[in-house]
Amino acid sequence: MELVIIAISSIEEQIIDAKRELNDLMEYPIQKLCEIIKEVGFECDLCAKCCTSEFNDHVFLLDNEIPHIRGITSDALKPAPYFEFCDNKGTFYVSGYALLTKEDGSCMFLENRRCKIYEDRPMICRLYPYMLHRETDDSGKVDWRQISGLNEHGCYHSEISDEECSKIAVLTKDYEVSYLKHQISFLESVNKHFKEHGLKHVQSIYDRMMRNMKKGDKVRVMVFCNGKFEEHLL
Ligand code: SF4
Image (cartoon, rainbow, N blue to C red; front, top):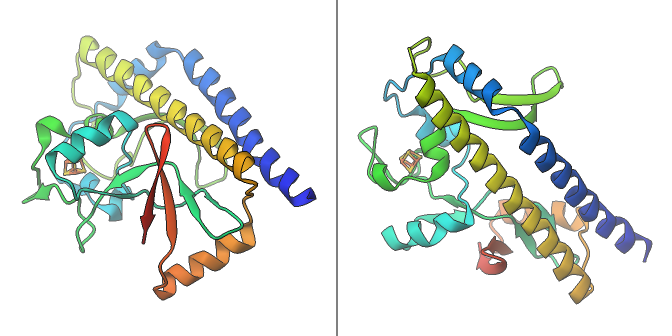
């Protein structure tokens, strides 16, 4: 019984943290982000590194992007990696979908270092390398991050107009707000689902099921999508 209370309060704590983060994000001055974008002056040199898992782990999709990507092709999605929870019956829960990658780790839409769906690419691909969220750096310091992979790709110190900086900053902030709202909605849905079905997150079962999956066993994964969970056997 005690375990249930701890597990549920842990999700509730995560909800409180995420809402606090959202409030802080809303208050982040857009002008400051504009200035950083201007100062960095990032320019894409078409290296395509950001379209590979080696460089950029995975492309997470927001809810409103799922129907669009499914409309392009039905087999472009996979449950995002790093499942957040596993219930006491061994079912995983993850907050959404990511784009599939090929065996070499490149995005399934990447061909000859070009995006095959460039005009329809997901929002994160449009904004990259800009970001606006708190993250821990190599020394363990948690702070706002505004540029991903600084000095690891592309060109810098290019001239970007004030108008363009402002446009990028607004889009970046909008994206991060949408992402956090998505995460809050996921956490609230898991919390509700667990309460309604008498379930709880159990870390030892999570670890065991992960080991089983790595050995090749099938696992059940519930993927959060537009307010519901979609079931997958992986
Ligand atoms: S959708 Fe296009 S831009 Fe986005 S990661 Fe894939 S290839 Fe790159």
